[in-house]
Length: 251
Image (cartoon, rainbow, N blue to C red):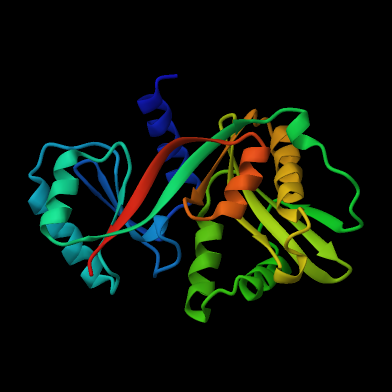
């Protein structure tokens, strides 16, 4: 598949897998609002250049985010027109951390896990005990807890929540979203006291196994470009970068 076509497909999968509480469609742009929880659900994503003047569309986006009490923010992917980048430069938008979208085949090797003495669960809906433990381990700001729950409930495709428990204590979890023959990997988290023991790799393998049972043959994920431990884990699991994106936000 040509690189630009794969980028567009993965953008569609990402936008479906991680929705927003409110969305405005404006001439090829998606303006998404979710009370501040996660960058993807509180920013503008451009799926096409559109035909209307870029400056006018940026004006409308700024006004819409101001109404929602959120800072105007844009996700600049390879699908975003160069005219948008130039307009954001002109307005003084700051460049934030670069993020990578990576993909890998789900293979027998990627599913191999050893018995580690932990108790593993796979749920198809967000379990309240896991969400509470996730929010505490992250930690998640109290004002974002309810928006996160609403976003998870809004996911329209089948979901897989894999979690590991050390006795009764939360050890880690990850969310998978199955769409077509792809598995989207989201919300990978290991509790602080469990880090450095390879649990993130085992979470990924368990989630991939659950995804394979749901019919997935490939997986994708998004990771911060400066998150070197996660990048090393994903590289060992066979993930490679397909494209990059960057947030641009008002000062």
